[in-house]
Length: 294
Image 1 (cartoon, one colour):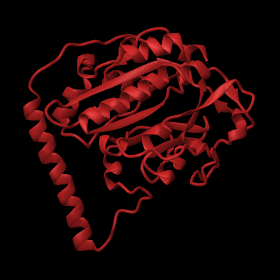
Image 2 (image 1 turned 135 degrees about the vertical axis):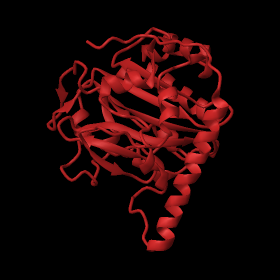
Image 3 (image 1 turned 90 degrees about the vertical axis):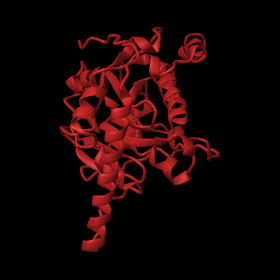
C-alpha cells in the first residue's frame, strides 16, 4: 500500500523572481491567444467559459478529457469516474450569495461511453463524493448543477466524505479567499489498493484521493499536495501533506506542465510548506467531535 506521510517543510525565500517570470509567461500566453483569434477569425472550441482551463490541465492520464462550463475532467471508463478534475477557484465568486443546493445527481451526457449512474451508489454504503465540491460553484445554479454530473462523483466512505475530505474542501475555499485565486486538481487514487466496485456499472472504490493546489498570486507563489486514504481519520490534516512531485509519482500525472516556466514549476512542485497554508484548529475539533460521528 502506498505510504501516506507528512512532508512539512519550512518557509522558503526568493519568490520575487518567480512572480516576475510567471507574470511574463501569463502575459505571453494571453497575447498569443489574442493574436490567434484576431488573425485566424477562429476561436478555441470548448464548453468552458474559461479558455485558460485548457492551459493547466494535467498530462499523462488514461481517460478522455471533457470540459464543462467551469471545470474540466479526464474520465476513465475502466473505473467509471474521473481520474482528475481541474478548475480555478476564485475568492470573488466564493463571496457571492449562495444559490440553493440542487442535488440533481445524473449521468453525464458528455461521456460518449456512458458515465456511472446515481443508482450505482444506492445501498452501497458509499457516498456520492464530489471532486469539485458543489459549494465551490454555489454562486450559480448552472455551475452548481454541473457538479452533480456523475462524471464528477466518486465512491467515498461516508465518514471520509463528511470528515477529513470536508475539512480539506472548506480550508481550500478559505485559502482561495485569502489568495484571491487558486488552481485546483483533485481526484481518486485508482491504482492504490482499490476496495472493490459498486453498482451495475462496476464503479471502482478508490483506496484514497489526492488534491493539488497552486497559488500564483503575489507576494508568495506556492503549491501543495494532499494524499488521503478513503476512510475515517482522526489525524490532523498536516499528516497528509505531500509535494506536487510526490503526487505526480503516485498518480502518473504531470501537473501544470507547460503552464509555468520550467524552472518555476520545478521549484514549486518540489516543496510543500504547510506554514503557507494555515490550518484551522476549530475545523479539526469539529471533525473529531462531530463530523466523524455522523
